[in-house]
Image (cartoon, rainbow, N blue to C red; front, top):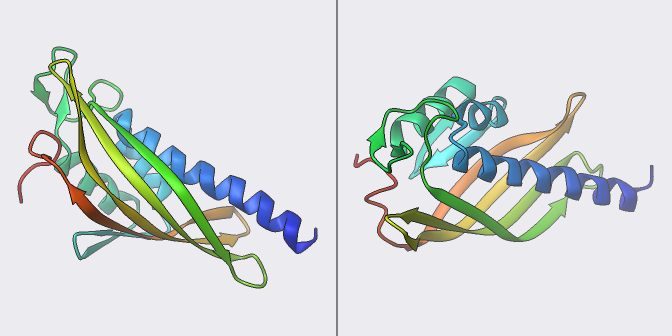
Length: 159
């Protein structure tokens, strides 16, 4: 396959991985979030987390989840919700010559709806690295840079 076609295919695959992350967080599917980073690293405020279990534990213990009555509850896959929508835009791709590694910069906005009110609680950038191996494209590294900090007291646990 020529390089242009490889890059087009890679862009679509990588974008889908990025959107799968956002959907998994919003659907209270931290197992999938962990799986997406099973072979990679994620930066959480200057602390790096490696591997599926570490990322799962980070997300399931840090995010505040709500039941159907909007009461805080323990994490239970698909049985609760952070009441958020993570929107990822402005994806900018840079590939190595072999189209086996990609650097992707993007913007994110996080909305949260509680008590009938929708609020933007965070915005910023993702700086991602992806690698392609025999199993396909995967996250190698994600750095989350929150640049527009709103009220996240009902989204993330303190500490």
